Length: 386
Image 1 (cartoon, rainbow, N blue to C red):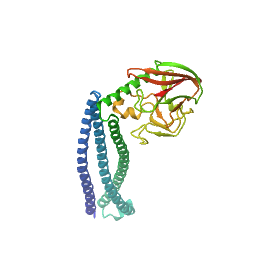
Image 2 (image 1 turned 120 degrees about the vertical axis):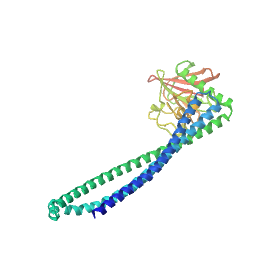
Image 3 (image 1 turned 135 degrees about the vertical axis):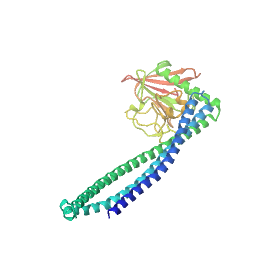
Image 4 (image 1 turned 60 degrees about the vertical axis):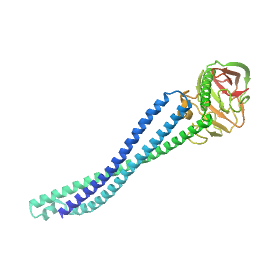
């Protein structure tokens, strides 16, 4: 009987070793594939860094975007392999946990029987000799020790199993986010080719307009625009209209709305109230990857709803994802909005100024400014007619 139990224990150990060996072979294969993918990721990241140092041309921009798409695709492959590796480990743990639980259940029954026979007096009375008594006591202690070890092993395996399952779920979420990023990058490339029509001259015009707009906005906030005082204006009064189509330093109809205090811009959403809107600030309208639209103030909007929102304040989707734009500026100091109704209204009462700024872009960017009565705040409304 004792030899049979030893045989069963050995067989169980062999089973676990075989399972772990097969799992190890699979893990080594997956790890080799992961290492290969990670080497490709490093090489692609190096090529992207090299491309960033080149001149801003449409060809280099397309190369850069293709490499970004390639990099994201590689990272998706990396995540998929990590999930595959974890799934294999989880399957092995499931087998091990099932087998250990089965063995432990059998040992609980056996332990119960031994407990009834394992009282020192019972062992002594049932022993043929002192040597037999010592042997039986030693065997009982070993059996109990093995029970404790099996329980610890089962608890450890269960903990590892649950931890690996949680990690796999996190990787699945990461994979979903990477998929959205890849789709966004492909949309960005498609949009660039549509805007430029794969024409280098149009791309350079796009760059020049963005640089000129940034120069103009910074100059206007700093008070370097040419202005004419109009006079007092009431809250909600008409002060301008959004230019239809492209205009000075703008490739399409929109208004750049800025809130400034003592020359420092503030997030307009801190002042504007909730309103009906459509978010087109990301890779496409209502794509879900755009800038947050979270007004939490009390001001009425400078244009009539429904608001068409194309870029937010601060570190925006465009800043982080449009590579050629990111090389021009890293912080958007207002919000870009539009509406089916082009009328622009003062958000608060104050003194109205009409102005324009002519910089290196070679055109005059028109704007209006309202110096508000009740505070040190000013609001600017750019790309408008008056």
